[in-house]
Image: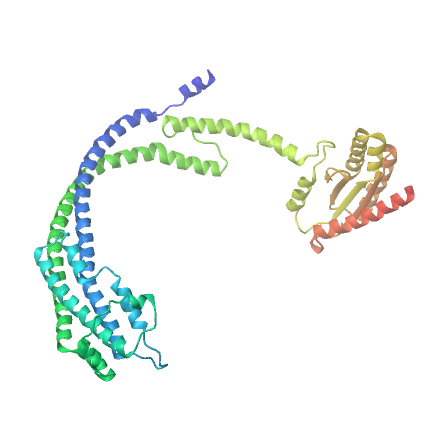
Length: 451
């Protein structure tokens, strides 16, 4: 019932009232955009496919020339330098030669693939001519390698054995080593071989040019279609921008700006304005303000619980450390006193922990009554007190009252004190260490007397 009354008090336009026309407008715009995008995607897909095919087909065509050139170079490298300076047979080029033979870019293989591609017949014709010359070059290379192997036997190796062997004629076998080398070089350096190389290069390049010209024409047509559809999309986009701007301004004023203001107010720990924005935004502001009031009340309780020792109601160690951080570092005198209850363990062991708790409370009463409000409980039997703007005489008077209070309460507490006439001349840490040393000296004396 209270929640209903709260909602009635909050004004503003509801989100549901705004979303109905927005959803209708977005549905219409979405349908318009989908149609245009589908047309663009179809044309773009065709364009992408054409470009990919052009690149792939060009690469496949040039692979015929690249493979043929690599075979020619490696075969020539072996024939021209069959022996290394070390006297070993130069098998490096032959390894590369054998590896290239395994690649699927021999002339016939490339032509077979192009016969399945979507290309003009003229491209295939150029590649067939190039393939024939490449095959002639391959035969000349294998022939030359066979002649050189007669002069320089090759070491056993699976890669070298994979190179097809050409059967030499009787005349060739009868040649001297020098004649065989000369014949091998003539095969790779002669006029016929040079013509074949030129034929391969010229026909592959001509085929690639024809291929690229054909696909450039088709790509150009696809680009024109994409451009037309993009122009249509631009017209639709410009048409709907006015509606979107109106919707954006409305949302900006009713949602985003109020929420942005809320963020700043929350960062500043201030109450939110419940009179701005959509109705739901105002409800959020009202709920936050209510929660903030409850949080502040709970924080106060938790802070007190976190900084207070439950047994003695004195500030705890955490509050003591905060107290030192909040204190100024110069301009006044300071005394730090540390306390430790003597024989607390004996009391706990002989009389029980309830008696021990009573002893702690009595000690806390003695300390706080003699040394003022800035007294703290560190832990089980440890306490601390801080006196500011004090003189040694005042400290001594308080210590005397403290001794009398111990007798009244029948407790024994060791005390260590450290004093600084100007806190800027020392540090809190040094005062604590000095007070701790003095306290443990007194504690040892008390236990020696008891022993």
